[in-house]
Image (cartoon, rainbow, N blue to C red; front, side):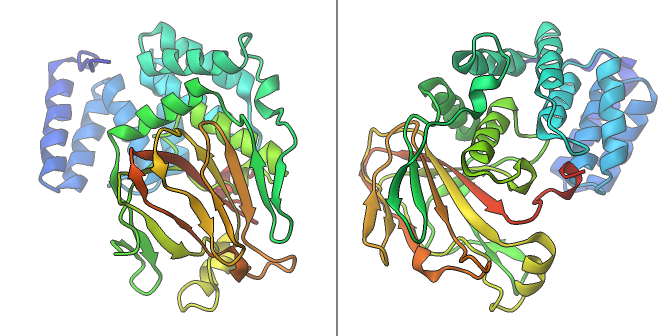
Length: 345
């Protein structure tokens, strides 16, 4: 969709353009000031941009409540993207309870105002439930048991082709070299053991299709939706891989004990295979002797923790490299505490 800066007049448009130049120069604090001035001049576009940044702390202070207020004002003033973001917040359960009816209504408003991504999301969701009532989104067939202890479950036909295609396309332009979090430096670093690429989505970058898939995961394994971290789409070109690793947060490693105490353990990983037209690329659990090449639309869930919550080192696994074709997977980490506390009420 083409952005329009007319709301608020030429002075507001000039402030928005200046904010873009300042951001490009790394002068983010000044860019925020420009957006604030454009907002005061009545620009719905500036108000939406400013709200998105402070909701997630993107090159700006993290001011969730103020950001939500701004996005509500922008939607009330006719903002199309603002209505789409409000739809995401409703579906995510801002304040503690997911409200899909409100989310769908807001998505329809955004679509009617010309926000094409909202219209496309509604089409994808309708491929699962034509009446858009959402009842079928959390109805999951019983899984196939690949391994009992530790638990590895396979969900056939977890999502359909339309959802897979949407997730791939939503990630394609966002891919970056995948990184590994280093507790000592508290930074994401490039690792030679992880050569694939990844696309991540924060709260204002995600959409209703992503949230539907996460809701389906929540229902499938009986873990609250709020315990979901942000989803990541992984991409493997031929020869790219993730070597053997664990998904749990190891409290024995310096810097991680506090994270486990405050944010909880990553007790489960849920993968959704988004395509199958590649060779190789299996998910391998070397300790358990399991190699699985997912089919398009399949879900694979494995439990990373023992009954007492301690890490289960039998879950060591790898994403092996495809030898032909590219591989796409949605990867979801699930905590034993709310990963996004404000969604838990």
